[in-house]
Length: 247
Image 1: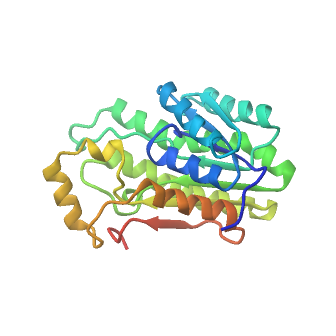
Image 2: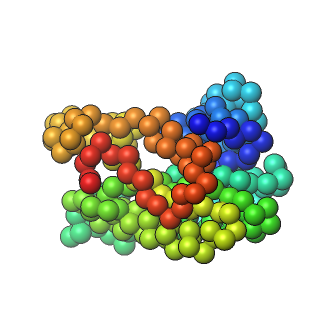
Image 3: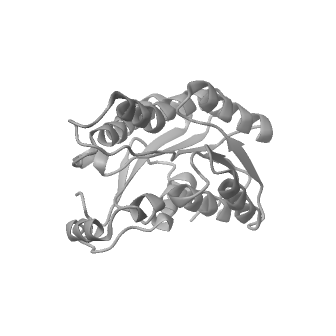
């Protein structure tokens, strides 16, 4: 895999889980990484220390990316700190799982604002910098649920499907400026979110996965790193890393 020396990356929701794995993988390839978090400062600082151990710079930035002013302020903070921003990874996401008959407006709004609107906010904010340098790698973390749907996740499915559609449109507009935009659609991955699912339900989920195991955050991270380092001729794509749960 190619190197990312002297590149600046921002990972939203980068303090733990898939976000932390992505941040560490990018740092391993030589990128300086900004870690965004909403509430877990200690975890973000721990991730930053792990990044610095790899011989690169780390920056910790608190922001709620569901709020447009904070999301755009986050991008400005990173650009002001490092002087540029080359790689944007939109990873922040939440769930509020309920069937439609129990879903509230607040459940819908919270998921759409955090998972989908944040992608628009950060991408629109980073464009001036990427356009000026005629280079950018934007990688949006979607989900197979955005392709296949899932019981009790209409809000989450809509947000992740919206990310895929946004990715394709943005890629068409920005390709001429050497800015690639891609989405990664993970399947069920070993994170704190999955750990909260009861064991009997996890067994039922495993029955749906042809590879008979859950994904690892590092497997998502390596795909992000590939797109950032070697994906120069890949844009507008959704890459499935899901063990075959959706084909």
